[in-house]
Amino acid sequence: MCVADGTLTSISPQPIHRGTRPVDCLLSTVDFLSPGKDLLSGAVIIVRALRAHGFTAYFAGGCVRDALRGAPIKDIDIATSATPEQVAALFPAQSIGVGKAFGVMLVVLDGVSYDVATFRTDGGYQDGRHPTSIAYAPAEHDAQRRDFTVNALFYDPITEQIIDYVGGLDDLRAGLLRTVGDPLRRFREDRLRLLRAIRFAAVCQWRIEPATWRALCAEAPHLPCVSAERIRTEFLRTLCQAPTPSAALDLLADSGLLATFFPELLALRGCLQDPIWHPEGDVWRHTARMLDLAPAPRAPHLVWAILLHDIGKPAALQVGTKPDGSPAYRTPNHAAIGAEMTPAILRRFKESRETIEAVTAAVAGHMQFVELPKMKPATARRFLGRPTIALELELHRLDCLSSHAKLDLYALAQERLAQFAAEPILPPPLLTGRDLLALGFTPGPALGQLLKAAYTRQLEGASREELLAFARDNAP
Image (cartoon, rainbow, N blue to C red; front, side, top):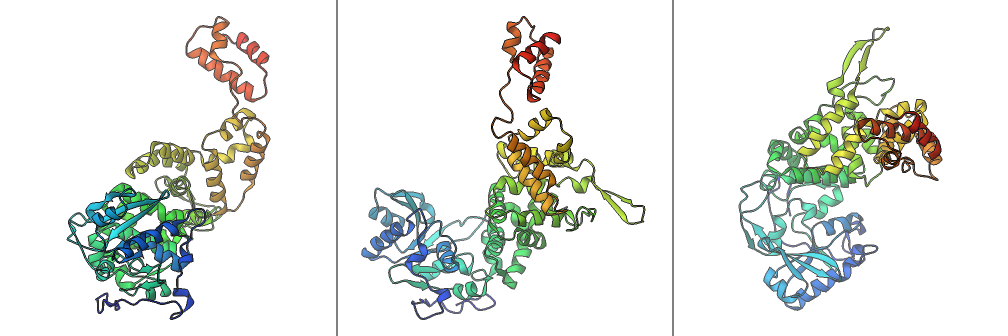
Protein backbone atom coordinates (compact mmCIF):
# COMPACT_ATOMS: atom_id res chain seq x y z
CA MET A 1 0.00 0.00 0.00
CA CYS A 2 1.23 3.53 -0.74
CA VAL A 3 1.11 6.12 2.01
CA ALA A 4 0.62 9.86 1.45
CA ASP A 5 4.25 10.65 0.69
CA GLY A 6 4.41 7.94 -1.97
CA THR A 7 6.86 5.64 -0.13
CA LEU A 8 6.23 1.93 -0.39
CA THR A 9 5.32 0.42 2.96
CA SER A 10 3.97 -2.94 1.82
CA ILE A 11 3.83 -4.97 -1.35
CA SER A 12 1.50 -7.67 -0.13
CA PRO A 13 -1.40 -8.23 -2.56
CA GLN A 14 -4.85 -7.13 -1.54
CA PRO A 15 -7.27 -9.23 -3.61
CA ILE A 16 -10.79 -7.88 -3.42
CA HIS A 17 -13.33 -10.72 -3.48
CA ARG A 18 -16.89 -10.12 -4.60
CA GLY A 19 -19.01 -9.24 -1.60
CA THR A 20 -16.19 -8.03 0.65
CA ARG A 21 -16.18 -4.36 -0.40
CA PRO A 22 -18.81 -1.79 -1.46
CA VAL A 23 -20.36 -2.49 -4.84
CA ASP A 24 -18.58 0.47 -6.46
CA CYS A 25 -15.20 -1.32 -6.29
CA LEU A 26 -16.30 -4.78 -7.46
CA LEU A 27 -15.98 -6.28 -10.91
CA SER A 28 -17.25 -9.31 -12.73
CA THR A 29 -16.25 -10.44 -16.18
CA VAL A 30 -19.46 -8.94 -17.56
CA ASP A 31 -18.00 -5.46 -16.89
CA PHE A 32 -15.49 -6.12 -19.70
CA LEU A 33 -18.05 -6.82 -22.40
CA SER A 34 -17.90 -4.35 -25.27
CA PRO A 35 -20.90 -3.93 -27.62
CA GLY A 36 -20.17 -5.09 -31.16
CA LYS A 37 -16.80 -6.69 -30.35
CA ASP A 38 -16.31 -9.69 -28.10
CA LEU A 39 -13.16 -8.56 -26.35
CA LEU A 40 -13.82 -10.66 -23.29
CA SER A 41 -13.94 -14.16 -24.77
CA GLY A 42 -10.53 -13.92 -26.44
CA ALA A 43 -8.95 -12.38 -23.35
CA VAL A 44 -10.28 -15.17 -21.13
CA ILE A 45 -9.02 -17.81 -23.60
CA ILE A 46 -5.52 -16.32 -23.34
CA VAL A 47 -5.63 -16.16 -19.54
CA ARG A 48 -6.90 -19.75 -19.25
CA ALA A 49 -4.21 -21.03 -21.62
CA LEU A 50 -1.48 -19.30 -19.62
CA ARG A 51 -2.90 -20.59 -16.34
CA ALA A 52 -3.13 -24.14 -17.69
CA HIS A 53 0.62 -24.07 -18.30
CA GLY A 54 1.47 -22.85 -14.81
CA PHE A 55 1.77 -19.10 -15.47
CA THR A 56 0.13 -16.22 -13.62
CA ALA A 57 -2.04 -14.03 -15.86
CA TYR A 58 -4.30 -11.04 -15.17
CA PHE A 59 -6.13 -8.30 -16.98
CA ALA A 60 -4.04 -5.18 -16.41
CA GLY A 61 -4.02 -1.40 -16.48
CA GLY A 62 -6.55 0.75 -18.29
CA CYS A 63 -9.21 -1.89 -18.86
CA VAL A 64 -9.43 -2.54 -15.10
CA ARG A 65 -9.51 1.18 -14.35
CA ASP A 66 -12.27 1.83 -16.90
CA ALA A 67 -14.36 -1.17 -15.85
CA LEU A 68 -14.31 0.13 -12.29
CA ARG A 69 -15.37 3.56 -13.55
CA GLY A 70 -18.16 2.09 -15.66
CA ALA A 71 -16.51 3.50 -18.78
CA PRO A 72 -16.45 1.67 -22.15
CA ILE A 73 -13.68 -0.94 -22.53
CA LYS A 74 -11.85 -0.48 -25.84
CA ASP A 75 -9.17 -3.12 -25.36
CA ILE A 76 -7.95 -5.61 -22.79
CA ASP A 77 -4.27 -5.89 -21.92
CA ILE A 78 -2.96 -9.00 -20.22
CA ALA A 79 0.01 -9.16 -17.84
CA THR A 80 1.64 -12.51 -17.20
CA SER A 81 4.63 -14.30 -15.68
CA ALA A 82 5.21 -16.01 -19.06
CA THR A 83 8.07 -14.67 -21.16
CA PRO A 84 7.49 -13.53 -24.76
CA GLU A 85 8.99 -16.81 -26.01
CA GLN A 86 6.62 -18.81 -23.81
CA VAL A 87 3.64 -16.76 -25.04
CA ALA A 88 4.72 -17.36 -28.64
CA ALA A 89 5.02 -21.10 -27.95
CA LEU A 90 1.45 -21.21 -26.61
CA PHE A 91 0.05 -19.19 -29.54
CA PRO A 92 2.43 -19.96 -32.42
CA ALA A 93 0.07 -18.89 -35.21
CA GLN A 94 -1.52 -15.94 -33.42
CA SER A 95 1.38 -14.09 -31.77
CA ILE A 96 3.49 -11.23 -33.14
CA GLY A 97 6.56 -9.87 -31.38
CA VAL A 98 5.73 -6.18 -31.87
CA GLY A 99 7.23 -5.13 -28.52
CA LYS A 100 9.31 -8.18 -27.71
CA ALA A 101 12.27 -6.07 -26.55
CA PHE A 102 10.00 -4.70 -23.80
CA GLY A 103 8.42 -8.05 -23.01
CA VAL A 104 5.25 -7.45 -25.05
CA MET A 105 3.66 -9.85 -27.53
CA LEU A 106 0.59 -9.16 -29.66
CA VAL A 107 -1.82 -12.10 -29.70
CA VAL A 108 -4.61 -11.97 -32.30
CA LEU A 109 -7.71 -14.12 -31.79
CA ASP A 110 -10.66 -13.90 -34.18
CA GLY A 111 -9.43 -10.56 -35.47
CA VAL A 112 -9.12 -9.00 -31.99
CA SER A 113 -5.64 -7.95 -30.81
CA TYR A 114 -4.44 -8.30 -27.22
CA ASP A 115 -1.19 -7.00 -25.74
CA VAL A 116 0.28 -9.75 -23.61
CA ALA A 117 3.11 -8.31 -21.49
CA THR A 118 5.50 -10.10 -19.17
CA PHE A 119 5.64 -8.77 -15.59
CA ARG A 120 8.79 -6.64 -15.50
CA THR A 121 10.80 -3.90 -13.88
CA ASP A 122 12.45 -1.15 -15.92
CA GLY A 123 16.11 -0.17 -15.89
CA GLY A 124 17.35 3.41 -16.09
CA TYR A 125 15.85 6.01 -18.40
CA GLN A 126 18.16 8.22 -20.48
CA ASP A 127 15.90 9.87 -23.06
CA GLY A 128 12.95 10.79 -20.84
CA ARG A 129 10.73 8.29 -22.64
CA HIS A 130 12.05 4.73 -22.77
CA PRO A 131 13.86 2.40 -20.35
CA THR A 132 17.39 1.39 -21.36
CA SER A 133 16.71 -2.15 -20.14
CA ILE A 134 14.04 -4.34 -18.58
CA ALA A 135 14.11 -7.34 -16.25
CA TYR A 136 11.34 -9.86 -15.72
CA ALA A 137 9.90 -9.70 -12.18
CA PRO A 138 6.92 -10.70 -10.00
CA ALA A 139 3.54 -9.08 -10.46
CA GLU A 140 3.92 -6.77 -7.45
CA HIS A 141 7.13 -5.30 -8.87
CA ASP A 142 5.43 -4.79 -12.23
CA ALA A 143 2.70 -2.78 -10.51
CA GLN A 144 5.30 -0.59 -8.82
CA ARG A 145 6.95 0.47 -12.10
CA ARG A 146 3.66 1.74 -13.61
CA ASP A 147 2.73 5.43 -13.85
CA PHE A 148 -0.38 6.01 -11.70
CA THR A 149 -1.95 3.94 -8.97
CA VAL A 150 -5.27 3.70 -10.80
CA ASN A 151 -3.42 2.21 -13.78
CA ALA A 152 -1.56 -0.37 -11.69
CA LEU A 153 -4.55 -2.56 -10.81
CA PHE A 154 -4.81 -6.19 -11.93
CA TYR A 155 -7.96 -8.26 -12.34
CA ASP A 156 -8.26 -12.04 -12.28
CA PRO A 157 -11.15 -12.90 -14.66
CA ILE A 158 -11.27 -16.50 -13.45
CA THR A 159 -11.76 -15.80 -9.73
CA GLU A 160 -13.16 -12.28 -10.28
CA GLN A 161 -10.63 -10.73 -7.91
CA ILE A 162 -8.98 -7.32 -8.05
CA ILE A 163 -5.29 -7.39 -7.15
CA ASP A 164 -4.09 -4.05 -5.78
CA TYR A 165 -0.47 -3.62 -4.68
CA VAL A 166 -0.31 0.20 -4.70
CA GLY A 167 -3.54 1.59 -3.22
CA GLY A 168 -5.16 2.22 -6.59
CA LEU A 169 -8.64 1.24 -5.42
CA ASP A 170 -8.62 3.80 -2.64
CA ASP A 171 -7.46 6.52 -5.04
CA LEU A 172 -10.06 5.53 -7.62
CA ARG A 173 -12.84 5.69 -5.03
CA ALA A 174 -11.57 9.11 -3.91
CA GLY A 175 -11.27 10.39 -7.49
CA LEU A 176 -7.56 11.03 -6.94
CA LEU A 177 -4.74 10.73 -9.47
CA ARG A 178 -1.48 9.78 -7.78
CA THR A 179 1.79 8.44 -9.17
CA VAL A 180 3.07 5.07 -8.05
CA GLY A 181 5.94 5.86 -5.70
CA ASP A 182 8.04 9.02 -6.02
CA PRO A 183 6.29 11.41 -8.47
CA LEU A 184 9.50 13.15 -9.58
CA ARG A 185 11.04 9.81 -10.46
CA ARG A 186 7.92 8.68 -12.35
CA PHE A 187 7.80 11.87 -14.45
CA ARG A 188 11.54 11.88 -15.11
CA GLU A 189 11.36 8.31 -16.36
CA ASP A 190 8.82 9.22 -19.00
CA ARG A 191 8.00 12.89 -19.64
CA LEU A 192 4.90 11.97 -21.63
CA ARG A 193 3.37 11.06 -18.26
CA LEU A 194 3.10 14.81 -17.60
CA LEU A 195 0.46 15.08 -20.32
CA ARG A 196 -1.07 11.72 -19.44
CA ALA A 197 -1.68 13.04 -15.92
CA ILE A 198 -3.63 15.98 -17.34
CA ARG A 199 -5.60 13.68 -19.63
CA PHE A 200 -6.61 11.25 -16.88
CA ALA A 201 -7.53 14.11 -14.54
CA ALA A 202 -9.63 15.85 -17.20
CA VAL A 203 -11.27 12.82 -18.83
CA CYS A 204 -12.03 11.01 -15.56
CA GLN A 205 -12.69 14.28 -13.70
CA TRP A 206 -10.23 13.41 -10.93
CA ARG A 207 -8.18 15.66 -8.67
CA ILE A 208 -4.42 15.45 -8.96
CA GLU A 209 -2.82 14.52 -5.63
CA PRO A 210 -0.78 17.50 -4.26
CA ALA A 211 2.68 15.90 -4.35
CA THR A 212 1.97 14.61 -7.86
CA TRP A 213 0.90 18.11 -8.95
CA ARG A 214 4.00 19.76 -7.50
CA ALA A 215 6.25 17.29 -9.30
CA LEU A 216 4.30 17.77 -12.53
CA CYS A 217 4.80 21.55 -12.38
CA ALA A 218 8.49 21.15 -11.56
CA GLU A 219 9.07 18.84 -14.52
CA ALA A 220 6.89 20.76 -17.03
CA PRO A 221 9.86 22.61 -18.64
CA HIS A 222 11.30 19.24 -19.70
CA LEU A 223 8.30 18.19 -21.80
CA PRO A 224 9.95 19.23 -25.12
CA CYS A 225 12.15 16.10 -25.00
CA VAL A 226 8.99 14.26 -26.10
CA SER A 227 8.33 14.17 -29.86
CA ALA A 228 5.85 16.63 -31.35
CA GLU A 229 3.73 13.75 -32.65
CA ARG A 230 3.31 12.23 -29.17
CA ILE A 231 2.52 15.64 -27.65
CA ARG A 232 -0.06 16.27 -30.36
CA THR A 233 -1.70 12.87 -29.86
CA GLU A 234 -1.96 13.25 -26.09
CA PHE A 235 -3.11 16.88 -26.29
CA LEU A 236 -5.84 16.16 -28.85
CA ARG A 237 -6.95 13.02 -27.06
CA THR A 238 -7.47 15.06 -23.91
CA LEU A 239 -9.51 17.81 -25.58
CA CYS A 240 -11.50 15.42 -27.76
CA GLN A 241 -12.55 13.18 -24.84
CA ALA A 242 -12.76 15.36 -21.72
CA PRO A 243 -16.31 16.13 -20.51
CA THR A 244 -15.14 19.69 -19.72
CA PRO A 245 -12.11 20.56 -21.88
CA SER A 246 -11.79 23.99 -20.27
CA ALA A 247 -10.61 22.27 -17.08
CA ALA A 248 -7.88 20.53 -19.07
CA LEU A 249 -6.77 23.81 -20.65
CA ASP A 250 -6.56 25.45 -17.23
CA LEU A 251 -4.48 22.56 -15.88
CA LEU A 252 -2.16 22.74 -18.90
CA ALA A 253 -1.73 26.48 -18.46
CA ASP A 254 -1.39 26.51 -14.67
CA SER A 255 1.17 23.68 -14.67
CA GLY A 256 3.44 25.41 -17.18
CA LEU A 257 3.04 22.63 -19.76
CA LEU A 258 1.17 24.72 -22.34
CA ALA A 259 3.94 27.31 -22.47
CA THR A 260 6.36 24.61 -23.63
CA PHE A 261 4.43 23.42 -26.67
CA PHE A 262 1.65 25.93 -27.51
CA PRO A 263 2.62 29.46 -26.35
CA GLU A 264 0.35 31.07 -28.98
CA LEU A 265 -2.68 29.57 -27.23
CA LEU A 266 -1.46 30.73 -23.83
CA ALA A 267 -1.32 34.28 -25.25
CA LEU A 268 -5.15 34.25 -25.40
CA ARG A 269 -5.21 34.56 -21.61
CA GLY A 270 -5.83 38.19 -20.77
CA CYS A 271 -6.58 39.21 -24.39
CA LEU A 272 -9.65 41.33 -23.66
CA GLN A 273 -12.76 41.65 -25.84
CA ASP A 274 -15.76 43.95 -26.06
CA PRO A 275 -18.14 42.75 -23.33
CA ILE A 276 -21.14 43.63 -25.50
CA TRP A 277 -20.23 40.86 -27.93
CA HIS A 278 -18.25 38.72 -25.53
CA PRO A 279 -19.81 38.76 -22.06
CA GLU A 280 -18.01 35.47 -21.32
CA GLY A 281 -14.65 37.22 -20.92
CA ASP A 282 -11.28 37.20 -22.65
CA VAL A 283 -10.33 35.20 -25.73
CA TRP A 284 -9.03 32.32 -23.59
CA ARG A 285 -12.35 31.91 -21.79
CA HIS A 286 -14.25 32.27 -25.07
CA THR A 287 -12.16 29.53 -26.72
CA ALA A 288 -12.43 27.22 -23.71
CA ARG A 289 -16.20 27.72 -23.58
CA MET A 290 -16.47 26.75 -27.26
CA LEU A 291 -14.72 23.46 -26.52
CA ASP A 292 -17.06 22.81 -23.59
CA LEU A 293 -20.10 23.41 -25.79
CA ALA A 294 -18.93 20.93 -28.44
CA PRO A 295 -20.28 17.50 -27.50
CA ALA A 296 -17.71 14.76 -26.85
CA PRO A 297 -16.16 12.91 -28.55
CA ARG A 298 -15.00 15.93 -30.56
CA ALA A 299 -13.40 15.59 -34.00
CA PRO A 300 -9.73 16.65 -34.07
CA HIS A 301 -10.36 19.03 -37.00
CA LEU A 302 -13.01 20.83 -34.95
CA VAL A 303 -10.78 21.02 -31.86
CA TRP A 304 -7.96 22.58 -33.91
CA ALA A 305 -10.37 25.02 -35.57
CA ILE A 306 -11.72 26.13 -32.18
CA LEU A 307 -8.26 26.55 -30.68
CA LEU A 308 -6.97 28.52 -33.67
CA HIS A 309 -9.95 30.52 -34.89
CA ASP A 310 -9.03 33.56 -32.74
CA ILE A 311 -5.31 32.88 -32.48
CA GLY A 312 -4.63 36.13 -34.35
CA LYS A 313 -6.47 38.34 -31.84
CA PRO A 314 -3.51 39.12 -29.53
CA ALA A 315 -1.52 40.41 -32.52
CA ALA A 316 -4.52 42.34 -33.88
CA LEU A 317 -5.72 43.85 -30.60
CA GLN A 318 -6.29 47.62 -30.62
CA VAL A 319 -7.44 49.36 -27.44
CA GLY A 320 -9.24 52.67 -27.71
CA THR A 321 -11.83 54.64 -25.77
CA LYS A 322 -15.61 54.68 -26.21
CA PRO A 323 -17.58 57.95 -26.01
CA ASP A 324 -18.54 57.09 -22.43
CA GLY A 325 -14.86 56.78 -21.49
CA SER A 326 -14.83 52.99 -21.22
CA PRO A 327 -12.16 51.01 -23.11
CA ALA A 328 -12.91 49.85 -26.65
CA TYR A 329 -11.33 46.59 -27.82
CA ARG A 330 -10.99 45.89 -31.54
CA THR A 331 -9.17 43.09 -33.40
CA PRO A 332 -9.36 44.09 -37.08
CA ASN A 333 -8.23 41.48 -39.59
CA HIS A 334 -7.67 38.87 -36.88
CA ALA A 335 -9.06 36.07 -39.07
CA ALA A 336 -6.48 36.73 -41.79
CA ILE A 337 -3.70 37.01 -39.20
CA GLY A 338 -4.83 33.74 -37.63
CA ALA A 339 -4.98 32.01 -41.01
CA GLU A 340 -1.41 33.10 -41.63
CA MET A 341 -0.28 31.72 -38.24
CA THR A 342 -2.19 28.43 -38.44
CA PRO A 343 -0.11 26.44 -40.98
CA ALA A 344 3.15 27.02 -39.11
CA ILE A 345 1.57 25.98 -35.80
CA LEU A 346 0.06 22.80 -37.23
CA ARG A 347 3.28 21.91 -39.05
CA ARG A 348 5.07 22.22 -35.70
CA PHE A 349 2.68 19.57 -34.39
CA LYS A 350 3.43 17.41 -37.47
CA GLU A 351 -0.17 17.54 -38.64
CA SER A 352 -1.19 16.24 -42.07
CA ARG A 353 -1.52 18.49 -45.11
CA GLU A 354 -5.24 17.73 -45.27
CA THR A 355 -5.72 18.89 -41.65
CA ILE A 356 -3.64 22.02 -42.19
CA GLU A 357 -5.62 23.02 -45.28
CA ALA A 358 -9.03 22.36 -43.72
CA VAL A 359 -8.32 24.14 -40.44
CA THR A 360 -6.64 27.10 -42.16
CA ALA A 361 -9.69 27.53 -44.40
CA ALA A 362 -11.99 27.45 -41.35
CA VAL A 363 -9.87 30.03 -39.50
CA ALA A 364 -9.70 32.29 -42.55
CA GLY A 365 -13.44 32.13 -43.23
CA HIS A 366 -14.95 32.18 -39.75
CA MET A 367 -15.87 35.89 -39.95
CA GLN A 368 -17.46 35.65 -43.41
CA PHE A 369 -20.87 34.44 -42.24
CA VAL A 370 -21.77 38.05 -41.43
CA GLU A 371 -21.70 38.74 -45.20
CA LEU A 372 -24.11 35.92 -46.09
CA PRO A 373 -27.34 38.04 -46.05
CA LYS A 374 -25.81 40.44 -48.60
CA MET A 375 -24.23 37.80 -50.85
CA LYS A 376 -25.43 37.41 -54.41
CA PRO A 377 -26.75 33.90 -55.19
CA ALA A 378 -23.56 32.90 -57.02
CA THR A 379 -21.34 34.14 -54.19
CA ALA A 380 -23.49 32.38 -51.58
CA ARG A 381 -23.31 29.11 -53.52
CA ARG A 382 -19.55 29.36 -53.74
CA PHE A 383 -19.34 30.16 -50.03
CA LEU A 384 -21.65 27.32 -48.93
CA GLY A 385 -20.18 24.92 -51.48
CA ARG A 386 -16.68 24.98 -50.00
CA PRO A 387 -15.41 21.51 -49.03
CA THR A 388 -14.89 22.68 -45.43
CA ILE A 389 -18.36 24.19 -44.99
CA ALA A 390 -19.54 21.55 -42.44
CA LEU A 391 -16.53 22.31 -40.24
CA GLU A 392 -17.01 26.07 -40.70
CA LEU A 393 -20.70 25.88 -39.85
CA GLU A 394 -20.07 24.03 -36.59
CA LEU A 395 -17.27 26.44 -35.73
CA HIS A 396 -19.60 29.38 -36.37
CA ARG A 397 -22.39 27.84 -34.27
CA LEU A 398 -20.08 27.31 -31.30
CA ASP A 399 -18.52 30.74 -31.78
CA CYS A 400 -21.94 32.34 -31.46
CA LEU A 401 -23.17 30.17 -28.58
CA SER A 402 -20.08 30.91 -26.53
CA SER A 403 -20.45 34.68 -26.88
CA HIS A 404 -23.55 36.63 -27.92
CA ALA A 405 -25.69 33.48 -28.46
CA LYS A 406 -27.28 34.79 -31.68
CA LEU A 407 -27.74 32.03 -34.27
CA ASP A 408 -29.58 33.95 -37.00
CA LEU A 409 -26.71 33.66 -39.50
CA TYR A 410 -26.32 29.96 -38.74
CA ALA A 411 -30.05 29.46 -39.37
CA LEU A 412 -29.79 31.41 -42.64
CA ALA A 413 -26.90 29.25 -43.80
CA GLN A 414 -28.87 26.09 -43.01
CA GLU A 415 -31.88 27.51 -44.87
CA ARG A 416 -29.78 28.24 -47.96
CA LEU A 417 -28.22 24.78 -47.82
CA ALA A 418 -31.69 23.24 -47.65
CA GLN A 419 -32.63 25.15 -50.81
CA PHE A 420 -29.72 23.54 -52.60
CA ALA A 421 -30.41 20.06 -51.22
CA ALA A 422 -32.03 18.79 -54.43
CA GLU A 423 -28.96 19.63 -56.53
CA PRO A 424 -25.23 20.09 -56.04
CA ILE A 425 -24.43 23.43 -54.43
CA LEU A 426 -21.65 23.80 -56.98
CA PRO A 427 -22.92 21.92 -60.08
CA PRO A 428 -20.64 20.93 -62.97
CA PRO A 429 -20.12 23.85 -65.40
CA LEU A 430 -22.52 23.95 -68.33
CA LEU A 431 -19.89 25.72 -70.43
CA THR A 432 -16.36 24.33 -70.64
CA GLY A 433 -13.12 25.34 -72.26
CA ARG A 434 -13.63 22.60 -74.84
CA ASP A 435 -16.95 24.17 -75.85
CA LEU A 436 -15.31 27.55 -76.42
CA LEU A 437 -12.38 26.10 -78.34
CA ALA A 438 -14.88 24.33 -80.62
CA LEU A 439 -16.41 27.74 -81.32
CA GLY A 440 -13.02 29.04 -82.44
CA PHE A 441 -11.91 30.81 -79.27
CA THR A 442 -8.17 31.15 -78.67
CA PRO A 443 -6.64 29.55 -75.54
CA GLY A 444 -5.21 31.94 -72.94
CA PRO A 445 -5.84 33.76 -69.65
CA ALA A 446 -8.73 35.74 -71.12
CA LEU A 447 -10.53 32.52 -71.93
CA GLY A 448 -10.21 31.43 -68.28
CA GLN A 449 -11.69 34.71 -67.09
CA LEU A 450 -14.60 34.29 -69.50
CA LEU A 451 -15.29 30.78 -68.21
CA LYS A 452 -15.23 32.05 -64.62
CA ALA A 453 -17.72 34.79 -65.46
CA ALA A 454 -19.93 32.29 -67.27
CA TYR A 455 -19.94 29.95 -64.28
CA THR A 456 -21.02 32.82 -62.03
CA ARG A 457 -23.98 33.43 -64.36
CA GLN A 458 -24.76 29.71 -64.29
CA LEU A 459 -24.91 29.80 -60.48
CA GLU A 460 -27.35 32.68 -60.81
CA GLY A 461 -29.65 30.56 -63.01
CA ALA A 462 -28.50 31.03 -66.61
CA SER A 463 -29.10 28.16 -69.07
CA ARG A 464 -26.48 26.70 -71.40
CA GLU A 465 -27.93 28.60 -74.36
CA GLU A 466 -27.73 31.86 -72.42
CA LEU A 467 -24.15 31.08 -71.47
CA LEU A 468 -23.18 30.44 -75.09
CA ALA A 469 -24.74 33.73 -76.07
CA PHE A 470 -22.87 35.46 -73.25
CA ALA A 471 -19.61 33.91 -74.44
CA ARG A 472 -20.13 35.08 -78.03
CA ASP A 473 -20.98 38.58 -76.85
CA ASN A 474 -17.85 38.75 -74.70
CA ALA A 475 -15.34 36.93 -76.87
CA PRO A 476 -11.73 37.83 -76.00
